Image (cartoon, rainbow, N blue to C red; front, side, top):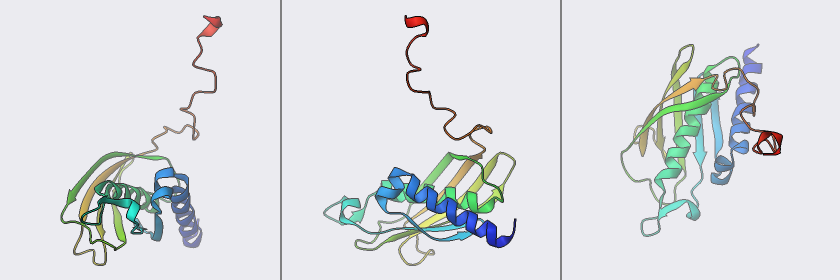
Length: 166
């Protein structure tokens, strides 16, 4: 696959993750940059995302979700072929409150891929990644569906009924 095709694949995966995840879509995530194991995402400041109305600071859960999502996209950006992934571990250190009224960005870098696990570092910030709101360290399981088709773990409709009409 050419670099151009791979970059387009990464952009399509990012778009699918942002629009296909109800939570990411509701929060308004956009991917600003993706490639070479790095993803930069943004969540726009909106009053409905504020955790404390007195301070106007975006809720910590929004920052957590942004860092996790950016980290997942960075994992995909580090791989040359798509596979399902799942967050195994996510540690976040909150360093300061986000500035009220400002969008939050997250930059994630997948710095190591093994056969079954990817390792990521990420920061959330408003304007300068050197002055982070939060920093994250994450691990992702690769091929989390064990080669099964997407949705293979879902039960077909009506399968919860007992066999033989009992």
